[in-house]
Length: 511
Image (cartoon, rainbow, N blue to C red; front, side):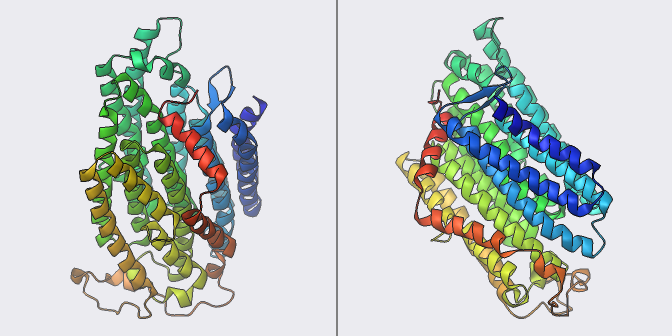
């Protein structure tokens, strides 16, 4: 119980410390220290959580295998992103964009964002989980508009409005589901606890549960970036500082989909395991893949491109859940998070080097910024499912599950969408590797850069002391790449064990 409270309170301590300090480097150090300490605490709790369940706060908080898996992923990505933020904002401070006031707002919001996601994952009470999910919206919106620029404020406002409406629908679904549980349990039981909802799920009335699940999927699916509720995501990812984009894409979307996966076995049990809830997940997953593929073909903003890849991969994970493949869905969650962290890290270095997010103006990246250039090219190859990387293996696993379940139409749409994404994203990557930059006067109607974008094209080669060359440190590229390559050819035993234990929770078979 003490360990559970420490996991919840550590980010809060970091939040207060960051808000009180008056030195930008000290604030960034607090962000790193709090996330690393949180990672150590989660790793200490992981074995007991996988073996059974850790509970605290009079049953209101709990960690089981599913929440522990996501919790470890969240804090690990946050720890690496905090280290990246140190380098990234040091370069920003060199240009005068990252002063003490901005650092305090960043540090406090960063730690609060981590803390709210942690509470989402450790809440055994669906009401607490909903409050924490809304808190992730508020804290991350402050990070999106950290610069107070017009485009960033507009993106943050759009994100705040769309996700708040979505979460409000999720609250309505929560009320409907808990009301149905109350009718079964009687006045003496608590219908807000996951443990109680799972226990009475087979006895719930199917019609109210179906309506509740629709609201829940739409509500939390909005935060997860599932199409057609994804419209906030490209703007927020593109306007946010790159460390923020990395955690938005790498772990926040996972937390929202985690909430849906919690409700999935309850809806299936209440509807007689006839596949009704699974079918809804398949539809939303395929819609996300198709929509993302269409936008990836025409997108030239590197951060918006990565955002649409998030829509695609959230759709793949939702599809895997819908096909009944909880284990490959969770495996793909890990692969996507690591890959998006890598690609956003490298994209941040490229944007600071070239002064633009337009990929048509980034040429010769392997020469101009070798580490970030090689990192983003390999990251894109991994992201599109090139053989040798772990995403290829998780997608192959999902296809196998679909074929075994005779879901041939879903498999065909998935393969077609993945093929379009593969060709389009590979074309973007090859264009950035090319040595010739876009020429002035390129016709925008023909798909070329606009005049204002061309005016930002750098003409000088980077100098050895240029801070933009120090944004991406080699461990932040090598570590994710090693994970993606190793897990692409070998599944470690501990990872396989936690995947199976977490998948059992989604199937409703865990204690």
